[in-house]
Each structure stands twice: as structure tokens, then as C-alpha cells.
Image 1 (tube, rainbow, N blue to C red):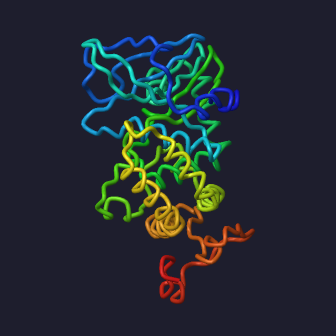
Image 2 (tube, rainbow, N blue to C red; image 1 turned 90 degrees about the horizontal axis):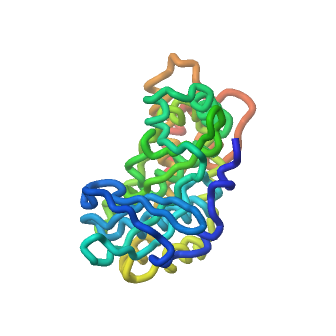
Length: 307
């Protein structure tokens, strides 16, 4: 399989907004519905989904910010550009263009499994989830950081040639960062859903690398990605809120995942899977060689968020 970097575009990361003259928009009949109302082409040949402004005007900006943060962390995420396109009625609409793979075939993980036409490709995708588990665990951590409520098999994309997997990448972030000035929308940090191929394989130690990467990401880098969004896509007050929320939430990611694994250990003690990490070990990102001890009274008296 080609590395996801062969799909990702540095040009799309380094640029914020595309010129509408570069794109031909093929609008669908139901452009007001949820999802992608159009298909785009450009020269040189590239393809993208269009993520429209629906009732939430910040959708394009959230798609771009999420994709660029993921790219900064070297995660297998979609590349995104902002663009103002002309609709069939002549009006102008700000949108996000989410880059498609240029592989000969291109399906969501959900549709690929459902159609069951490429058994070898399906097996290679399963091998990808098993082999790159630290990265897919990293996507779980990342989705929790940006509060992405919509990670399913439908928004993991697979690019492939006949009998051969080319890319696996994660897209669709319009359900992320849906925060308001009410702090309760972003201060409650809990682990969000992920797909079974990730959840069934991840152990607590797989989450540590990207917990540390997110915690140590320079504040200036986070601010730059948000501040460069043009004001007609995202007003200043939203930028201030997003920066504040992201900095707050990354401080609470580790306790959130710790609490999850403790609960899993209580729910599934008979599976033989050693979920439970010692909090001091988990906090300091040290992976021990031996099995972990069960929680003690001292641990219960020292919850991770109140040390």
C-alpha cells in the first residue's frame, strides 16, 4: 500500500483558499441536503467533495481547521481547501473542498465491505488497521480532541486499484468543534466513538504517542491554523473560542482516555485483555514490560484530574 502521504497534498495544506476559476462544480439536484451536494474537477486533474454551508455557517472552516491540525500531527486525514463557488441560481457560496484520492477506484470503507467485490483489498484494509494501530489509535485521540461526533465506516475512505490497496484516509469533520460561547459545549471532555476496527484492537499504550503529540503541539501552530481562516468563513469571536477550547481540551484528553480504559477493564474483565493502566504510568507515557496491577484504594483517592 502506498503511504497516505502520497495522497495528501502539501499544496493544499500550505494554501487556505482556492480560486473558483480553477474548479468546475457539478451540482446535484438536492444541493440543500446533508452531505456533499456537488462534485468538483480541476486542471491538473483533481477531485473533491464539496462540503456546503448548511444551517451551520462554520462547516467549511471546521473542515479546513480539522484537516490541517490532523496533517500537522501526521495523521492520515483528508486534504481540504476553502473556496467560494457559484451555485446554479447565480449566488456565491463558501464551501470546503475535500480532496479525493485519484486511485482508479474510490469507496468508503462501509461501501467496500457491503459490496464485497474486492476481497483482497478488504483484507489489506483490515491488515492496515492491525498494522498501523498507533496511527489509527491516534485518530481516535484526535477525534476526541476536536470533539468529532461522527467517526464511522462511512467516513473512512479507501482508494484502490484492482486487487491492490492504495490509500486509507479519514475525512468528514463537519460534526467537529460545534462549540458555542457556552463552556459546557466544550469543557466536557469524554472519549468519542470510533469504528470497530479501531476500538477492538486498541490498548491503552497505543494511545500514548498521539496524546503526547497533541499535548506538546506548539500553541502558536494551533493558533496559526485557526487565525489564517478568512473572516468571511469564520469570525474573530469563533477563532478565539476554538483556540481556547482546543487548548483546554488537550489538557484533559489523557484523563478522559484513562477513565475509559478503567471502565472497560470493569466491563470486560473476562476477555483477558489488560486494559487497566496505572495512572502514574499513563500520565508519564511510560509503557511497562509487565502486566498492570488492579486499581488500589490509593488510586481511587487520587483521580487523574485532581492530582
